[in-house]
Image (cartoon, rainbow, N blue to C red):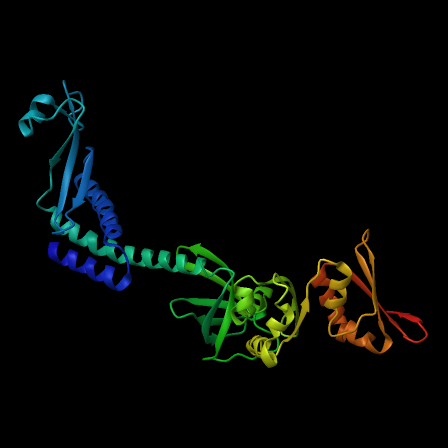
Length: 350
């Protein structure tokens, strides 16, 4: 099997990217176990494969001693010096003990180990690839949909996304190309388990990073995201450069940047608001697109009392309270909204 082994390992290294050194180490370990199983030795045995020829050698290692107490692990100084006069007490002598019948066993073992090691190495490489994709976006093609899950082909792996993680307002079918957020990658004996989602707020964040160079290079920061997937998302952004408008950069020319994100999310509405370290300003901005007249802060209870024109009250609260709910989640403040007749100043608590 000598030449065939080297050829096979060269091909595996070239096509699979698995190092020959890794394969040789695995083979030597397996052949050592096979030797001990078949020949029942208690000696200190080593198996080595010649990296150039593929020939397999079995060696017994013995310590050079003045007087032998254990013949399996020791060799006398006199015997050692016959092999090489340079040996001294305490040195290790390697004696080749390769059985003639070991070639057949080695060939069978090599075939099993090569196959097993290819699978293990491929799984390991796949895990390393996808662990670097954790908290990032991957693209895939819908392969199959059943009552609970969606099978997605990622190109070099497959993943199963629960139906609960798809957007509520989208209908996927076989062959659809979709972007997925990698929530977590778990290492298993069957390969990496890639946990993905289209409802995670991280998907919105990563989509904006890919569409807005100023976010990618750190000029603009995404400070907070509040999302009700498939319906609406609020995103708070801040510019580290006074000459760069954080909201404008995210919206893009004629809204092209935000529209690309909206299209990927199947029409999900996105409010981009300016983050501020001033709570009043931040809370007011978070209720966009509603116009806010004033904000009163209760730091003890972390409540923000907001006053808006009566005609904007329903806009500030949003359908089924969504706008106010997302604003509260975005800012971390409980928000109480009141409407007022601007002329009379009369308030209407909601």
